[in-house]
Image 1: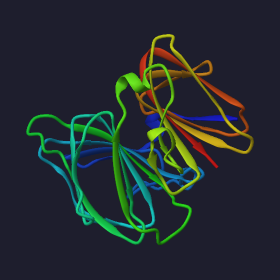
Image 2 (image 1 turned 180 degrees about the horizontal axis):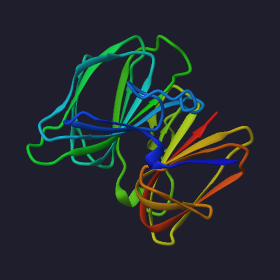
Image 3 (image 1 turned 90 degrees about the vertical axis):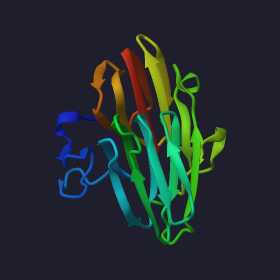
Image 4 (image 1 turned 90 degrees about the horizontal axis):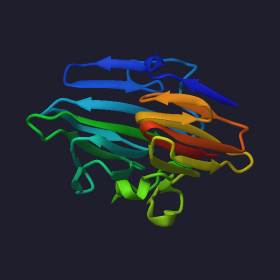
Length: 232
């Protein structure tokens, strides 16, 4: 069963410096029908104005992935990490017993456009941790590239949950397939452009929950970028 969730049906908050769309309930957006899916708790699509950002704030007991689509995001945290996240980079922060961090757009002229993804960990009180890796466009072109997993296989970042996250860039007509093992579920999010899931065209910001399906077939419709979450 595949259930679509169109971009315009998401929660939305425009705070001037921050324009944010929420796939699932977050902050002032609350919808009891969309509290997350399996261990996937948050997909926020954020656009941050030049020279603006999120001041230092706390997190705990969450696996947080940041995935930049355009621009550059500066990161600082209480573990001593400081980095700049650019398109192709995947940042994983295990909040665990508690961390504080800030995210800032250091550009004076360009917005930064990124996805912040929260996955509920398999246990509470995990030691906080940080990881950042780059996955080139060539590595994702025409195929589903594993970018995050429980065991860090194939060079992916490691998350503390039975979940695997894939990213693909698909040009017109390019096809990528993913087999779901028995009892597994999936969430699909189109990050940019357009992608067909089966025979249905999904546009940027669209998503879909998937259960009781054996295989997912993605086809480029023009040009698109898609994330796939394979979930227990």
